[in-house]
Image (cartoon, rainbow, N blue to C red):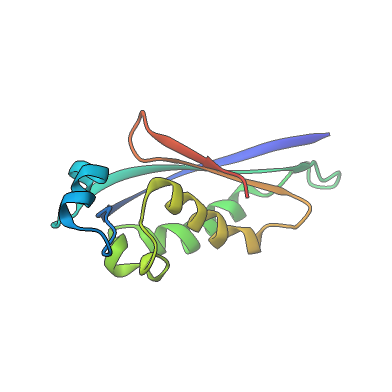
Length: 135
């Protein structure tokens, strides 16, 4: 019997969506206000879910305190109150779209989750715009 457990977290970060190999006009046409050269910020909401069998001894799929600590160490400390374009090495050559941020978060957490368990990241950039990545 597989069960999914989830932990919600949040972080605040600034970014700019643009490609340096495109003209300002093309960046503006594709990314609009998100191409602001002075950056803009979001209050991101994050849901990290782990799916797996319930451990018969503990009754857990995964200890949620452990998941909370993983998110704090590998996501919040790495991304919170940062300029994603300038302060986060993963975005040095990667446009920090919500899609790419979700994949980066998944890649940061995946090595710390048992291989037999599934990992899912849901990232809300706004209350109405969100992405889901499951590997």
